[in-house]
Amino acid sequence: MTVDRPSPLDRLTFPAKLAYGAGDAGPAITANLLVFLQLAFLTDVAGLPAGLAGSVLMVSKIGDAINDPIIGVMSDRTRSRWGRRYSWMLWGAIPFGIMFFLQWLVPSGDAWVRYGYYVALGLLFNIAYTAVNLPYTALTAELTDDYDERTSLNSFRFAFSIGGSLLSLVLGAVFAQAIADPVWRYIWLAGSCTILSVLPIVWCVVGTFRYGMAAERRCAERNDSAPPMGLKQQLAIAFSNRPFLYVIGIYLCSWLAVQLTASILPYFVVSYMGMQQSDFFLVAIAVQLTSFVMLFVWSALSRRWGKRGVYFAGMGLWIVAQAGLLLLQPGQVGLLYALAVMAGVGVSTAYLVPWSMLPDVIELDELQTGQRREGVFYAFMVFLQKLGLALALWLVGLALELAGYIASQPGQAIPAQPSSALWAIRMSIGPLPTAALIAGLVLAYFYPITREIHAEILLKLDERKRSNSAD
Image (cartoon, rainbow, N blue to C red; front, side, top):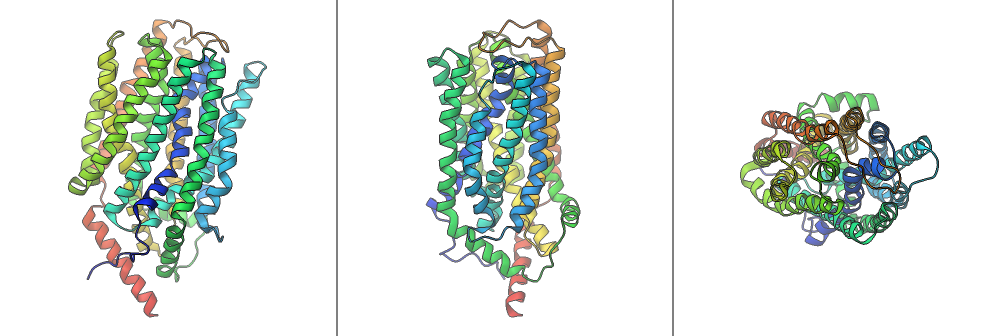
């Protein structure tokens, strides 16, 4: 007995996969600039002390983490002619763009006025970001049931994600060369990226709409007898799902390493290596371009090695690269770019693997409970990840301030930093991300859902659907 596949009408075509992938371009552009540049912008352009700047990121991330499960549950329960996911994406797109742009302005007033402004904008932006991005990510588990097809679908998603990130970095490099005033440089960069962020969301909705609505009907057919559950009961079931806990841990460790490295990289390139800000963009482009190319390599290899095998291979190279950054000396520019390329090979698996594992976990939950609750699982995966990142980024900002990092005045050049601050920068880009990556490898070793186990889950779900149809 085999599991039924969707009919040819419902199979994802190449244009549909392109449209789905495009949906992550806008969130990726905004998130990439915030990860790479926000902390440096707050200290070196807006003139906030490093500890205060780090707390801006912490407060906005905590607010973001809190709204994830709320919007996740609300999207699961949404009933609309636009579907439970697409209505959120459409209504959230314009506020998402506006709030992103406003974060890169420098208001007048003292440091505390600017601090309050950035905290408020960070909280509002993250509500709009979640309203767009969380329902979008939940589509992965709905559009296809196939184990390998999900990896393929995520390769399209993250091709656009990394492609959008690359585009934002290229624009950053162009504006860094063309505009001397750092305040206006960020205004032009933010304005351009705002426009480029909103349009792909509409493309995604238009290009995948009929597939998403057909998927909702299929899920309803095989789960129509399941009783509704309250939020507390849903959370208890989600956190009793052992594979889900492993995926959360793998994702947290991977992205902790990504965001710690990305946030401290501008300081490392400019203050420690003695290079220009435009050079920072080139280093970041080297990482992201390598990640883009390797997505398709890892996606193909995952059919032979499995998701866990691909993760082991990528993380191993990435750990070597992170350790090498600690030993790097000023003037070793060629080696810096070589390590950036090596890191990019591993970063691509951080994009691809955890998000390809999560839909398998959701179907295990569906088998056990009789309900599809993508929003809950995606929300709480991101919720815990953001709480961890909020604490980590705040600690990095606090460590820089305690180490004597000197913030510049708005619009002024970045001052030379004391040796204690340079040492804190090196520790933040080397040992801390490396420890997170090693922890992720340990968790991936114990992740239990293989291709064979997933096939058994789909078989049992198919049998349930036949039983419901017969009744």
